[in-house]
Each structure stands twice: as C-alpha cells, then as structure tokens.
Image (cartoon, rainbow, N blue to C red; front, side, top):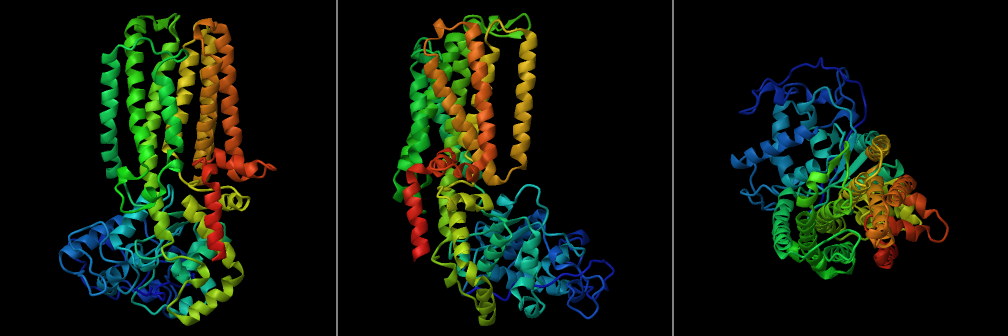
Length: 606
C-alpha cells in the first residue's frame, strides 16, 4: 500500500482563543463540551490558514496528550461497534478484535476526517485543545499500522515527564489543503515540531519498515542532526509477564517445599553449601544463555514464547528452584534458633551466626535475579520482534520512496550528503532499541551496542538486592558500636541518594549502562568475597568489619565512576576501551561482537 506522503504539515504563528464560532452542530452522542473544547471554531483560522491570522495557534503547539490517545482509542472502538468504521477492500480488519484494528488510512478517512469536518475542519489536536500545547515529543510512523496497535505502543512507550506529542494524522488538519505548508521540508510542520521535541518515538509495524517512506527518513535525518533521543515504541506485555510469573511460582514453591522437607543440613554463605554454588552457576548460564542459545528459535516471530531462548529458560526455572531451596534451608537451619538473639544492646546482629544473614539475603537476591532474567527474556523476545519490524525490507534510506516526486527531489537534495549517517542512526536504533548521541559515538568506536538502550531487570534486581545484602551482612557483624553503625547507615544512604538522583537525570541508555555496570561490579565483589572468605570460622569480627567495609566502599565508588564515564567514555580508553565497554554493557555483548559488526557492514555495503 503506497503511503500518503501529503499527510504531513505547516509553520508558526501566535495563539489566542477569541475565534469566531462558525459550526454549531451538536456534539457526537455521549460527548460533552469538555471532550471537544474547539468544536464549532473556524479550523482555517485556528490553523493560521485564513487571511485573518488573529487567534491562530503556532504549528509547534498542534499536539495531543497521553489522555487524548486514551480517549481516541475508546472513540474508535465505539465507532467500529456502531458501524461508522467498516472494513474495506484494502483493509480487511477484524471488527471483533482490538489489538490491531483498522489501519491509520481507514481510521482517518472514515472517522477523523468526517468528525473534524463537522467540528470546523480543524485537526483532532486543536479540536481537543484549541489553545494548543507545546510539543516535547515527536512520533514518526508509517500509516499502514492498525490504530489500536499504534495507540497501545505509544501509550506503553510514552516517556516520563513528556506532556504533548505531534502525530501527523491527528495534528494536521485533514480537511484543509496543506500542500503549501510542506513545499519546503525544512519549514514543514513536522520539521518545526521535531526541532522543538526532545525525543522522537519510532512506531514500527508488521507490514513494512517505516524507513521505506522518504518522509520518515527525513525525520530520522533531522532527529540525528539535532541530536534528539530516538527510541522504538513497544506494545504492552503486562499480561504476558503475569502469565510467566505464574509459571515461575511453580519451581519457587517446589524449591521451598524441597528445602524444608529435605533436611540438607547447614547452608552457610562461606562454607561448601550445596545450593549457593549451583545457584551461581545457573546465574552465569542464565546471563550468557541468550548469546549461546539457538538463534533460529529466538529470532523467529512465530515461535512460542517459552521456546525462544530455551537454554536461558531452562536455567531460569532451575535457578528459581535451587535458590528458593537455599532460602528454605537457611530459614530452617538458622532462623528459628537465632531469632531471639537478633537484638542485643540496641544493635541488630547475631553473635556466632551472623553468616545466616548472608545465606538468607543472597538466596533472596538470587531468586529476584532469576525472576528478573525471565522478565528480560520476554522483553528481549519483544525487542527482537520490534527490531525486525523496523527493518522489514529495509536496505538503505536512499531507496526510500515518496508518492510526490517534487517532495522526493527536495528531501533527497537536502539529505544526500548525510545518507550514510542516517543509515548509521537506523542501524544503532535497530541494535540498541534507541539511538542517542552517546550510543552512536560508542558504536562508531567499535562497541557492540546491541540491547544497550534497554534496562536489564535481572541486573537491576541483582544490583539492588546484593547491595542490600552487603549492608545487612555488615550491620550483622558483632562488636560494632551503635555510633559507628549510625554513621555507616547515614553515609551509605547519602551515596544511594546521589546515585538515584543521577540515575533519574540520566538518558535511558545511560541508565541501562549504569545498572549493568553496578550489577557486574557487585558480581565481582561477590566472587571475591566468596573465595577470600571461604572459611568463615577463621575470620574475626574485626577483620570482617574492615574487609567488608573496604569492599563495599570500593565497589560503590567503582560502580559510580564507571557509570559516570558511560559506554562512550569507556570506549575512548586506548586498545581495550571498546571491548571493556561491551563487557560492561547491558548485554555483555562481546561474544556476539563479530556477528554485530558483520551485520552493520552488510547494511553499509549493500
């Protein structure tokens, strides 16, 4: 289906609400005035396309909100149920499903255009917000996707803190002639709105790469040029995750029962306990399982979700079972006997049984880690699907088409010298799930940025839980004064607050890298701790206090420093920089680095 390239848009002006009311038709059934405050106003004047410019809204404010999309979805669903939107020869959608729905062409022709024509021929955006809302999010899409698919992906991927987005179908006046407004690509409404937005959200579809459309290529070019954050929209999967969490409840329960009923004896963190080494081995297998698994199963969209990455899935199920068994053993062997001794002189510790805390919290850490691995597995399957959708039939942006030859000529003249850079931005977007200046810089230095835009839930669970574990173990060491413990708690809470503040202000890819670095630094700390203190009976409380205190402090400082440097900063280190950045990255992708480089080279040389 050829894209309707002319459905893009205009230039800026100045707002006011004193517009004449030309249309006095009643609102649609069930609507109230608050649903369409712009209803009855003159759309031409509102969009600044009449001779009288007074009261017109700047193009950069032709935007809709998150709530507008929720409202639109309900309206489209109701219109389908009442027969206002019907399948056509070119769009045979199923009227009884609400996952994909009619495509954007059909929704525009059968619903948006008739409705906004009655309202006064303004856009859907200005019908909802006649005063306009400044743009801070730009959405690029291909028109061929279903309206429900589009709305659900955008709502699920809406960046935190963003207030209004530009969507050409809903922001442009579909009943007015806007051809004069897109004669110059640089001065077109979408170019102006993209310049104002901080983020660009790319919405893939099941039919064709959006980068087969020249206007979408131009939008990618502008986003790259203005150093915007570009990221891929993904559909909601909360119900899928709930089903998979219910499956994990089975090995978790079985492990608890086996641990409580087995009577396997002592299971301490620093002896040759049975469950801890097995859990750590399974955790390592789970971390690398997605790289060693069967790619034809992982990448095939029609494969059942539990069959994708089968090695990884098996390691997760076994890991939940074994770590929950360790949790039960630790509780059985220690908790009931030691609980009365936990409080002494106002200090929370256990005399000779302080390692119980290690067994307990590390077991919980491993359970949380394996649950996070399953969330990552589901998200990874989803990201593979979205990456494939993003490049269905894509080879070069230079081969993108446009229905208007004049538009095609003007756009190609403008971006001809930057085509290779736009290609590169698309490659980064496909590999990482997002494209930022720092990711593009890292990829140019040879870093494998596969999955670098996605926060690993397993890394997050491990980093948080293990940090808590170390704090609990340290506070449980006997002999530390109350004043020292109070100072230690305050200091570590300050460090945590600074880390969280920096995390909240960071870009999404920087957050993903920070979580990955933190988890790997703490993993090294765990391995060092495990082997250095293999015989806990020979260690004095004073030695453990110094040893653990130094380990926690250096690990925290190392994690913060590496997170601050980021992937692109570490990649600058001569010689080992790119490899080290890949090792510390979310996917620890050094094992598939050669494959990734070959993929990039294949696209570049095609």
